[in-house]
Image (cartoon, rainbow, N blue to C red):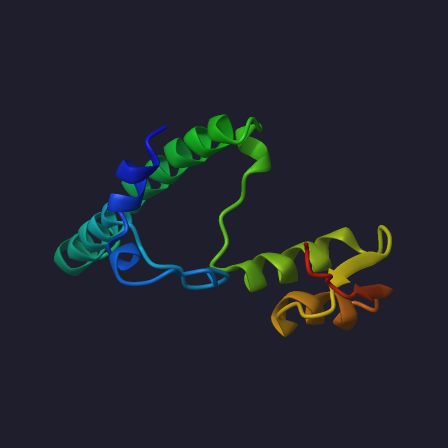
Length: 128
């Protein structure tokens, strides 16, 4: 894996050291190109190519599963980290306590609190 080649796919990396990627990270050139292609097709044809996009999403799910050594059925796509946390909190239904960093973004902790989980907030320590 060549990190310089990967970094070159992210134009924002030329200008910023971007550490907060929770909901809206900088897009890679490839993601931006595919997003444009999707919206161009939607503008031209409406949702007629919908089945094609679903097939492509499944192919991406398979590739991602391979990348992280998982099974495709265990990979889900969500709009953001917050959206994913809301889904998980609603699905698990009190399978245990939740441990969160004390300085976690509220949208990642509120789903657990709203579902009445016991949430323990742990202070982070500086690493020396």
